[in-house]
Length: 244
Image 1 (tube, rainbow, N blue to C red):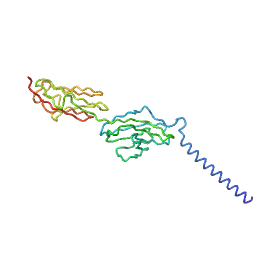
Image 2: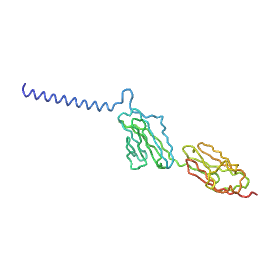
Image 3: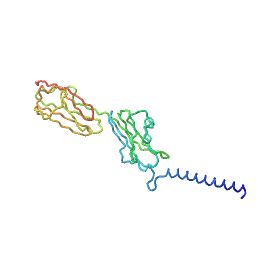
Image 4: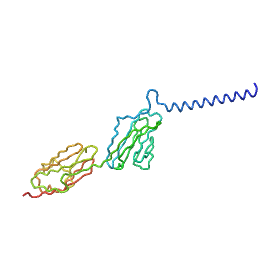
């Protein structure tokens, strides 16, 4: 066989191998971008709540659940300043209060915010790196509950009448599990020999806790403090005065 034919065969073999290699790379890249057969592309689980309320100074978590993610990545973006916060399990912000949370093979992708502040309120978007990207918005509202005692900060009660103190808790994301009353910095004992002391608490959008002290005497004067378990305490000073 002539040298020219040998050269031609070598070139043909190289072209064939190169073509096969390119084809393999093409199909590998192409197949990686395809969803798993029978599952469809990535989607968000919209049953997960998209309205989150958190407390000032506490930790709050924003979670999105992604199905059929494949080889895509999930990111969290803050809408207020279009700031990329997390990509996958990595955090991309200098604010150390923010952190990406994800367990391997799980569908939940969580943005954790520690020591939440009022300025953290707003829209956050969970994004999937499809082409074009798709996103799911979550609204975060950071609130600071307010506690007040009706008629405070000073109350004058006639001796022998009933002390009726009503504590109201509002703007809390949920009713406080407990409301504790104290008198002069001592937790009130409803089984004390003094007797005649009762508490009625109603929980809802507004939580009210009503402290009743019957047949007021001078020893009942002083500072009464209402302390909800999820809000700041507030106090009222009671003065027992002689009736007319």
